Image (tube, rainbow, N blue to C red; front, top):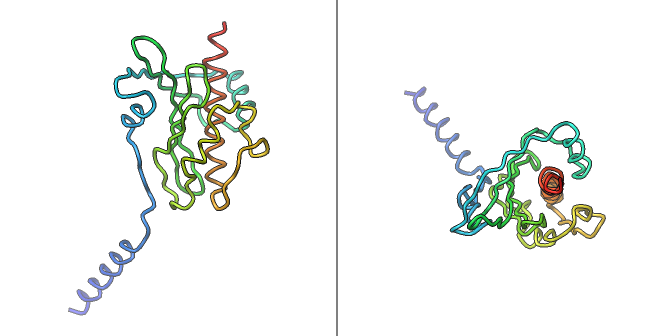
Length: 184
């Protein structure tokens, strides 16, 4: 009888700890919802898989000032009756210890038109607000830096740095793999 009570107390304690542990994970949009946000309800969305060679990888790393983890990049191309509406990339990276997923939306000519947080698993107070991402719209890749007018957020330094890195990476991949290739 004492063994059962002790086991029940242990189970009750585990349930109590689980119930009071904050659940930070927040998923805001599914992939389909994200594509609708990026291009509108009636757009056709095509997946564009890009495989840069070593030279292109080096150029992307130089432009983005970030080490690349993968040799595969996926852009989603929104179209309406064959006309390109824009490009979107979904990027996930660890902020402190947990992941954040952003969708970076580009105009047909490669300017940042929108940045949407799709998922954020860190505590909510570390999440940059949408208005912070507004300052990144239409900025040149060379201007995507805290030393060049991008304002940081006290208390969310790692989140803003991770967000800025993702945007730079998307812009660099676009420039090397789409824009530069269309010139040839």
